[in-house]
Image (cartoon, rainbow, N blue to C red; front, side, top):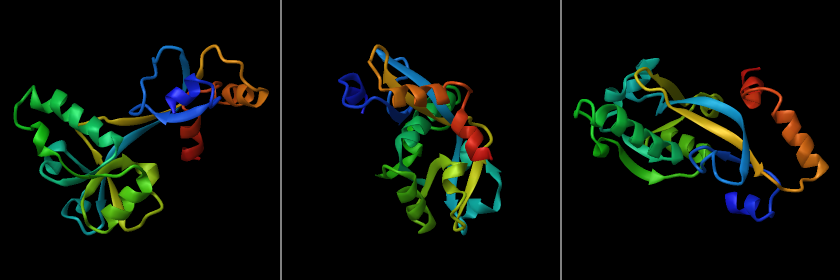
Length: 176
């Protein structure tokens, strides 16, 4: 997608910060959304009795991987593995890579594992529970990207103008 924006195939694209670097040369980006990530468990999972948990409580659990779970691995290594030595890279078992939240939620509610996702992605699914992880602050950031020196259509310019007027414009819509 980034290459499509760079070569002019696309005027605009929306991507997660896990999928590209916002400081990519030749690109401009506007952060549309910053959402906190938490753990999604089935309603009958032993952790579902809590409203929030610690990282240590998910150690050894089976995860379905999205881009964000790679983020979880990195954070675990940086925050826990190097400082205390009691949580290691292999303590997060990634069972399967799934590319979207709907697939993740379906697998989680079926009891095949747990996942890292946003609260908003899980709100309409009563068979799962979102748990905040108290000792970690993980976020999924979504960006609108476009080529820095491109000749953009009036519609693309209007779209950029609309979303560049306030910080996290989509977050405000979700919260409403």
